[in-house]
Image 1 (spheres, helix red, strand yellow):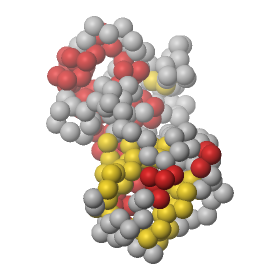
Image 2 (cartoon, protein in one colour; image 1 turned 180 degrees about the vertical axis):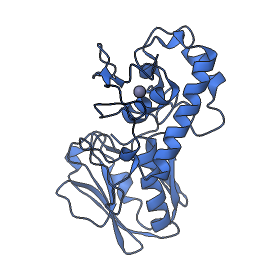
Image 3 (cartoon, protein in one colour; image 1 turned 90 degrees about the vertical axis):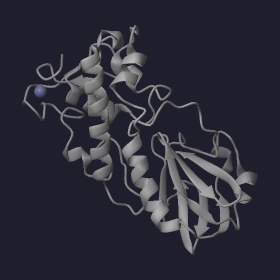
Image 4 (cartoon, protein in one colour; image 1 turned 135 degrees about the vertical axis):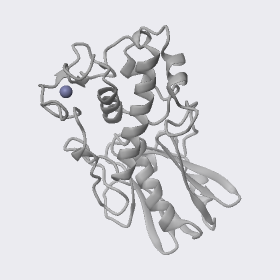
Length: 260
Ligand SMILES: [Zn+2]
């Protein structure tokens, strides 16, 4: 599932491509597949000038002059592309003569949804060790589940949470409230570092996910992961283990040597 770095990669590509251009036409495809059919509102975008694309957590916003923003959530498999054929086009905008398409084969993506309540952006100053320690303190839930809770911090999913915990030396199944102030600070720092690396490398394109940017290019963050999707730890070579209990539906990987 696309996380902050993948959504930011999409945002940058579309912003560079579409900023200042006019939405010439809108075609809403297969409207029955929308959970929230926003067809009329989407057609009303015609004639609008693109101010740019912005991002909040894992949400992408298309901002237009004098019109409400359109919120996209890519879900599991949603993609926004410039050109590109797909049998699953949900929305097609002609912007400055180019076809901007939202397609989604698995239907978990959303267009035109309201933004939910979201915690701070992990790359902003408001997200630091003191903040993280405060929201983890006293909580018995696994630390990994909490840092993936978008209401506490917006943008971390399975890949980057797994990698941030590894970089901070903290096991994913630890009770959140058991982290010391120093561990919370290390985790906040590590979260920022892995997300910044992910953005710099254009996101992660792993075997079981199929992230590609709007021009069809894969990311390179998968070359840097230390435990996610690996059999051995990329730092020390120890065999990677999975938590006995699932967190968010599946076992969470960690290195028993690097993480306490
Ligand atoms: Zn290790």
